[in-house]
Length: 107
Image (cartoon, rainbow, N blue to C red; front, side):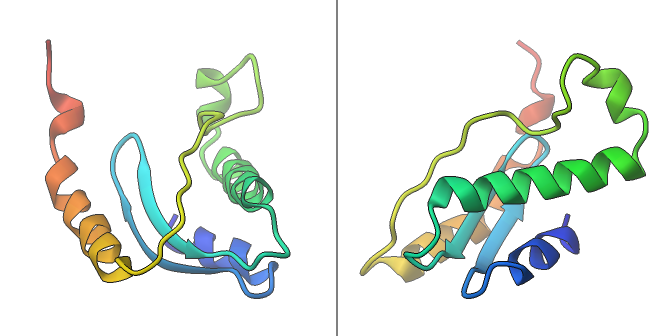
């Protein structure tokens, strides 16, 4: 994923991934997306292109997601960053350590 994300954003002039942290079941990401792009289009392209490459590399994904040609969940959360950009970047970095092991909890 660390190699795929930059390749996807290269095709969208001005889009940039500033920071991200990956957990087992989700990703926190801070991006620069110019106004000429709809956020939903950028996220759709990120998800679509990475899903395609993941399914090609890991053929077992087609057995897990056999009904649809998906890898990612359909939703996402987006918010704008203004004055507190440093706090948001710090949070994203902190979140990677914070989320470690939570997916393994059994209820």
